[in-house]
Image 1: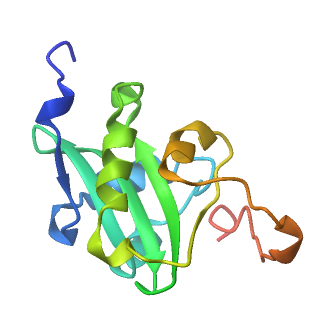
Image 2: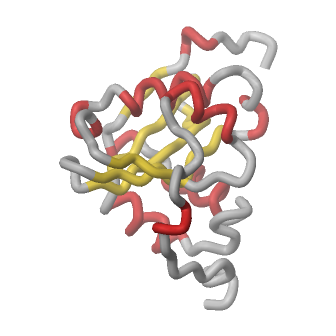
Length: 146
């Protein structure tokens, strides 16, 4: 990867550009979607805004946003393939995503992360000010048990 240059990355939000096999391969071994089926990944993508980063026509990063395009959005499934991590690909992808026309003027934009707070803070994300008001149903191992 000695010829990798950040300026050569192509960014897209066209669903036709997304490479399901690459996305599924990463997500199925991630801590948040371990064991997820390819069919579920495809369904989630079909019902979301999807964003990808590509290098030499290969998908190297992905993110999707679940949104009503009016008041609420949830950022999910953000990843950069291991061999491209640490090269600011994630910053470029999030900058691109945040500028999307359907994600402007939202009242609330949320995400959940175990370890990437530093990536999202410069984009305006912060710890929830009143976590006691949030509730969730969370089935952590749902993909592995089905």
